[in-house]
Image 1 (cartoon, rainbow, N blue to C red):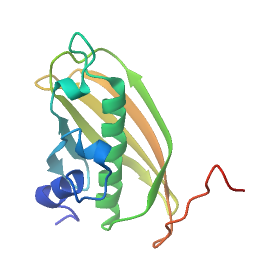
Image 2 (image 1 turned 90 degrees about the vertical axis):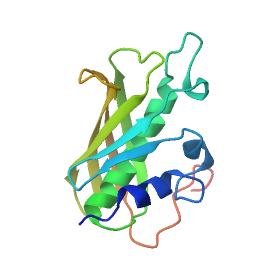
Image 3 (image 1 turned 120 degrees about the vertical axis):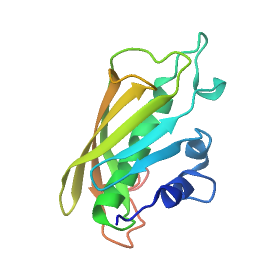
Length: 152
């Protein structure tokens, strides 16, 4: 059995979970959690759409970052303090008035760094609409301080 159940993963995505209000507002839905992959759904709505119904890239990038946090914690078997160090997203085609499905996988997990990949699709299609590659720093347990840009 893994670290998360669907219910505990979903609780992280909702108010009171470990993510911020901007993530709660996306209304992400956990559909699969395993040590191999995490699958989330971004339900289509006007809150994530540009005029014409195109799902905005910012929402998909936030989804990709979020899914990787869940996937890394699932792989580690614990909550960890993580910091995104790189998130590169290639958008291949538009999602128009459709839910977006993301599948995130940890590609390599080291002591201090985790690498992942997120493939994004529209609901009902296996053709990717975007792909994100992510790198996260895995900070020591209990680490809460980051190097702030306004301090040296």
